Image (cartoon, rainbow, N blue to C red; front, side):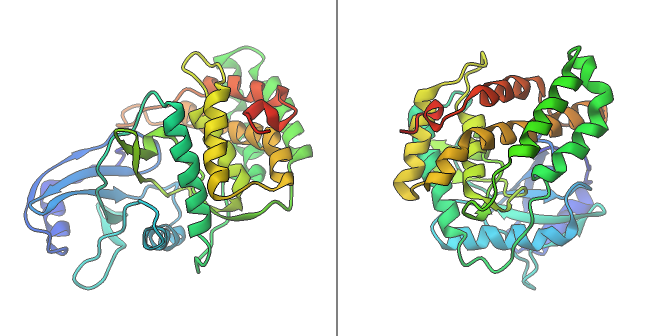
Amino acid sequence: MAVYTQIDDDALLAFMADYGLGDVLGYKGIAEGIENSNYLVTMTSGPYILTLYEKRVRIEDLPFFLSLMDHLAANGVPCPVPVRTGNGDALRELAGRPAALITFLPGFSTRSPTPIHCRAVGETLAMIHQAGEGMVLSRENGLGVTSWRPLLDSSEDGADSLRPGLKAELDAAMSRLEDNWPKGLPEGVIHADLFPDNVFFRHDHLSGVIDFYFACNDAFAYDLAVCINAWCFERDGSFNVTKARRLTAGYQSVRPLEDGEREALPILCAGAAMRFLVTRLYDWLNTPEHALVVRKDPMEYVEKLKFHLNATEPEAYGID
């Protein structure tokens, strides 16, 4: 989440009046994240999240995202749902951007995940994968393996400014991923961005999952690999195999992995690291100077990528 597009008071009041949620008591921008402009809007009926979709998000994908939240919530996944106007509209326009209002979920994201948190995330990720069955709409993964090379090529001139020799290092890693990327794994709807700031807890109970704007159809085990990258490394860069063991065990308690998925996990984890490395690198070099957005360090994922490229067996992730 972030704020790229500013809105004025009168435009917001007119926009919110169509929902019948009472009076606007206040609103403020949310700085976390990198994709869209987000505001917390407090009404007399309670808080809501207002999202203005920025240029990176394709307008034609928005019905998929909004329908997915409705579909998952109806199938037991704790996630927000779009709010509709009296005319039944969920997708509208505000400040020249497509916009939607969604329900607010209580809880807090954790900055220090524990193995208990990881187990709950694994269980919920598998729930999402199972609940996505029957989803009518589908969406190709626009940030899948074929997209990483163009993103890297567009940022390579700045890569060595972060660390000398990084450009050649990433080129070699990319070639290895392209040559060994697995095919034919079980797939369906995945979240694709289940980071700690997109998961809420109340005490140790997982209370909600948010930010489905990277959701798409792809391999389930790749989504698990994204979570391993996001949840199982410590702040000093070390890998916590206990957290990985609990995360994967939680996942398999709901949806057991097939043999091919387990065997492919090291390369999938390396690919997930590359995906976030190249997008962070691009944003690090291209984010507008005055945007209200927290840039994320791409070098964190350079070190994660190294770990995964040196892992050769699923046992490295605590999987027997």
